[in-house]
Image (cartoon, rainbow, N blue to C red; front, side, top):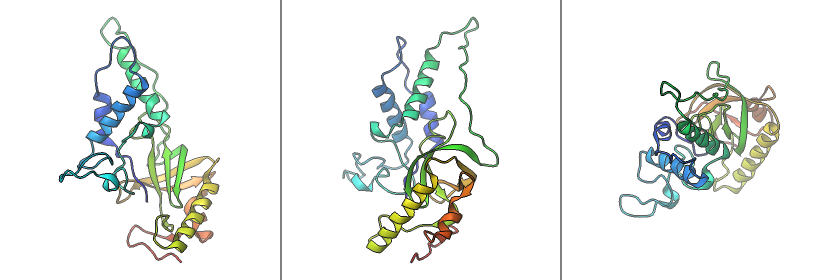
Length: 236
């Protein structure tokens, strides 16, 4: 379905990263490269990005985690760094450059609002992209660029046809399901309810757009089949 930005270890590299020049903030290009380097360092395999090589010395290319749908999604290129990620990196850099107070402590910065999180649910989610009928890319309303930004979300309880299927009829149905989800979600208040993790470590949530359930709408419109995480149903 879709690549997923892996979280927790990456945070250690970002918060502990390269020392900053004391005369001022690093340039955008430097900050982007720091984020990319940190992301790649936390990938457990040999092929995080297309330009890396495997144990046999072969270029990873389409076999890389970056190129595969599902699972890890390391940052590999400057274009992968979203404006939100860059803004948060600048904020962290500025915090390190703040003058120390009389007791040697840095003046605390105002913290951005954390996401509304009640029983693993999130409100006022920013929709970045509809990947396919049952998969979205979102940013949560909080400050952490790893745990909150550029997140893959799988819609709980349904499965839609595959856009990359070899069957042209399935591809056509997949595009129709994607179009339905785009129209259902765009320009609306998006909430994620009762989130967990699926087998690819993506967020697995009930998705609400203006209070309306996306999974139910997909089923009612005949754009999806019920799915409980096991063997995928045959979609006709």
